Image (cartoon, rainbow, N blue to C red; front, side, top):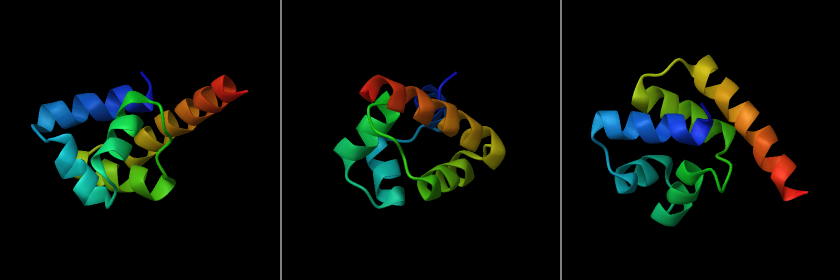
Length: 77
């Protein structure tokens, strides 16, 4: 499972809106949507915030984020 998939599932399980998470991360909704689709990489600090919001182990989410970041960068070249 990739980072984007994990945070989307976690958001849906918590019953949260993308708008609420964007606000919690202090970013606009389109930016959060791109992160959740895997089109944009979240910042490390945002990943840590999301782990707290979703009550997911920080190491788990950071590992997924690292793998996803590598995957995203490979498609940019």
